[in-house]
Length: 339
Ligand code: NAD
Ligand code: TYD
Image (cartoon, rainbow, N blue to C red; front, side, top):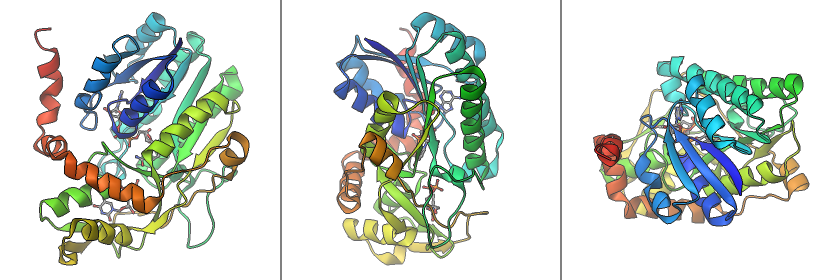
């Protein structure tokens, strides 16, 4: 058995990664460490706890709490750490950066220290294309570029990447980094572009498009990202960063129109609103390194993946209604009180 720590497993990508690992890696035993912030939903992993009682455990805690993390590592002796726990929303980082620094920077330092002390075989940091900054209309990000983050969120993620680099260089830690573009798919919190627009359209609410809607993101289905994380964990070369992207550059307005078209709702719902401060214009990933070295390529085509995702939100109305009402935040108390 490979003993694996996944952090942030109750969030969007973490939930999908836990499903992927438990299904595709029968010899991996997983502990999910998650603080259950506003973005963490324990309901997402409830079925996993029932389906894989001997291979899956949940631990509620903060990656920035050194004593808690040290005790967890002492108890489990992980051979692999996959760090996904983070504050992840750019708009929230503009409102207040403090919690981004605590979780995304201090939290990573605490995990790196624990990995060192307890001799974890490999540490994988899940990072983002946003650490590279913003592109004009030409070119794509490759791993050799300098880190030029523009938002408090991306600055905190870049700081984490540099800490990982420093622990590799200084302490000889075996660590790797994945940098991925914008994900979409099931379980994404409805504050991010795609689920927000789907949910608003279904509720006949306006769809707020920032600026002129011409900013470009490179979309990847979350299943492709999860497969890439596991590939890098298993085959990546220590000290290396690997870009992952979906080969699907889209202007925001194109996506919003596609969602309305799929749902049969009118384009009059679109409302152009004040732009995000410091809004990065364009992201696009060159993933040729991971394709060449590890044989990974994105497999989900965007049009089909988007349709499936919209249908998932249609089929899981109670899931996002509980989020919007705030009910899901009481789930932990319901699950764990009097147990
Ligand atoms: P998310 O916001 O949906 O989930 C984050 C999870 O981390 C939540 O379950 C939350 O409860 C948990 N968490 C937050 N602070 C914590 C703390 N201090 N201790 C323990 N757990 C904590 O985020 P996501 O979209 O699933 O992103 C996961 C990772 O992938 C992040 O590191 C993010 O930077 C990175 N990433 C995301 C995208 C994307 O498009 N969503 C793209 C590239 C990289
Ligand atoms: P988002 O999903 O927040 O991801 P990120 O900022 O990390 O790329 O936003 C994706 C794009 O959609 C980004 O260009 C901002 C834009 N956007 C809107 O136009 N309206 C919205 O309500 C949101 C949340 C995002």
